[in-house]
Amino acid sequence: MSRESNYNQAYKELEDKIKICEKCGLCKTRNKVVIGEGKLNSSLMLVGEGPGEDEDRTGRPFVGRAGQLLDRILSAVKIDRQETYIANVVKCRPPENRTPLQSEMLACGEFLEAQIALVKPKILVALGNTPLKFFLRVNGGITKFRGQWQTWRGIPLLPMFHPSYLLREESRAVGSPKELTWRDVKNLKSRLDNLN
Ligand code: URA
Ligand code: URA
Image (cartoon, rainbow, N blue to C red; front, top):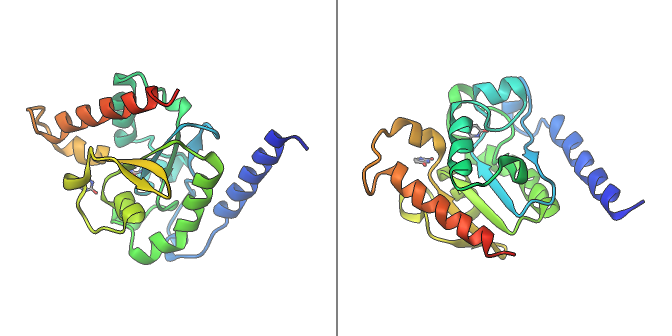
């Protein structure tokens, strides 16, 4: 088998495993498991919190309002979503969109780690407090950490605000979450451009 088909095979096996997972209580209320999607050898991997209602219904990450905003944020600096890989810390929707519990994050974490090991992104983006907690083991702190490069197992990691948070914040004034995100995504784009 070629290297590429081995790789696709490994990814497919991982997907099959995630699809039938019952390691935490979220499996009881989910409709579809939202594994993640995108380019398998992408330089950039974006990590959100967990599926919302639209994602739970369609089985795809970031397709609701937050996802549409994420697409606009990326395309503003000419990052094509199709060229990225997008996943979440938990693959099943938490009831009422509550924050995933620590136990749910731990149960699901091995899948995200396996996805990162397969995709081998050169840059990781943590969208909001949940992935920040997953990667850096800190509680809260997105306001402090956003825009500051970190590393996770040797991979550069940029924390950014979650797009759902930006939907609730109207202001575009200097220092507002939206304006800070504009700075962060330009920072991200320049780091991506400097990879090659
Ligand atoms: N919010 C997330 O964190 N992930 C999604 O996939 C959608 C909304
Ligand atoms: N809480 C989050 O989880 N993310 C944000 O971006 C802001 C607050």
